[in-house]
Image (cartoon, rainbow, N blue to C red):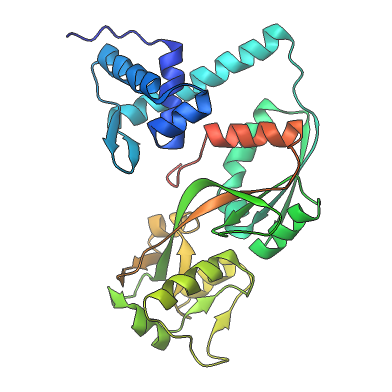
Length: 302
């Protein structure tokens, strides 16, 4: 059957939902439709365009190259249609203050792009972003000092709801001159390993993963602790040691060739960046921000 190049908006909406949730089931839940209905819309869209948009597997659905290109066109179309609907209907955009709190990697390397898009659409909202380690972020939301939080890899938190947003991976990062690759987890005990402070979400995730691979903590006083990701990156570049850092935080240094990543045999440390939600409902500004961030999820390469 020859492609017709017809693009129905409901099919486009379903396609974006699959792209943003990573699965047909997730898209069906978001849209309030049945899973067979979303599957049929995807097949109709692919047939109309004459191109495969999704690679389906047991772990979900991934975009093909054609799918990535279509998503790049579809997102601004959706945003323009939503803005037009708001304008014509006279819908009142949220105002007031949006109080966000986020751990350092997310605040420094992920949120700026999302906040820029949010401010372009909701100019009346004043944004206040507090930056802290994961334990402090959880406490800010728990005590009502923030409307919404984002943390790195916390599995659970008393009295709060944690919901995954986007994926990350922690990578062993070394100076550009480093030549030992790969290394074993047990070898890390003898390497100058640089750490964030206790209470850091990154540190907790790394320690948990390495213990599972047979790593033992070095003697007291042997570890070097630095209070920020930027300080650790600078120390690694200066040859002080190696560190596990978020793939989001080292994009520029890898591109410039000042840092490199090193494989650790048998160890991968994926983690989610997760929303931190209190017991009550989100206010209009927080709900609008979370909705926009869910629909326009950033990627490490963007």
